[in-house]
Length: 319
Image 1 (cartoon, rainbow, N blue to C red):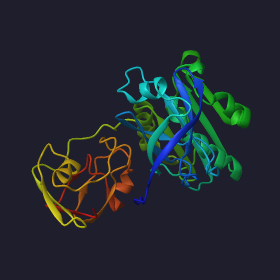
Image 2: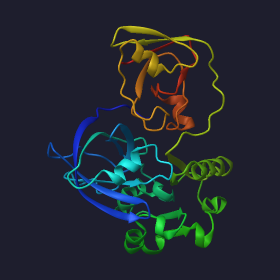
Image 3: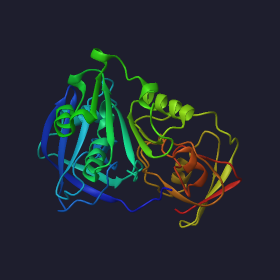
């Protein structure tokens, strides 16, 4: 079960930059306050590039509290964030940040299968290092458009040898999803998948058919959703703020609360970053995020009000 936690507002200084692959750039960050907050593999932070707030996985050593590394891919149709990071950020640039938070935590398992697509390799890099140090079986299958567009390839192969399977599409074709899950046991292997929606969705669909391994995914874009079950208006009480609002069709809980002066931190507004996570004290949420698993949707005490709705007449939130 996931829980919300205190996060830290950060003032970060870029101390180094480096090209990692075609249109992919690494930024090394330090804190003006000194030591950086602790984090665990799978965590990400918010970074403000101009007026754009984006989420980036930490892909460095969690034991190092003096610097962080994030990787930014220049999107072909950038909405502003990646273009700013590539064109206007350099050594000495000061960036506002927030975090870290982790909705993709590394769990204990007897074995691991890591599946990466493109820039989706970034949260897996510290996971692989942690698993390798434990000495448990693991392997990585890493696909991308071409070798030149795939970050960390030399580092991963040098460190881990044939545990790393590189699948550049221009040489070997796309990842063969059905073959990835063949031979896995039904419970002992943890599967971690991160990448574009086509890859994540295909792995989820195959896992639903085979039920092999325990699947964990992280998305960079929202999953496809069925039509909402809830229709009409409902009430949301912000218990700590002493405010109750009516949420209409077409208005998010987040916006309804904001219009009444109740501030909930948010970033993506698409249900993928986890910034707006809040505790549910009463009522039945309709989870429409791309973070919680199906099992967590039934058991979770939290919700993401940027996209989720309500299946009861009223929700009471701890805000």
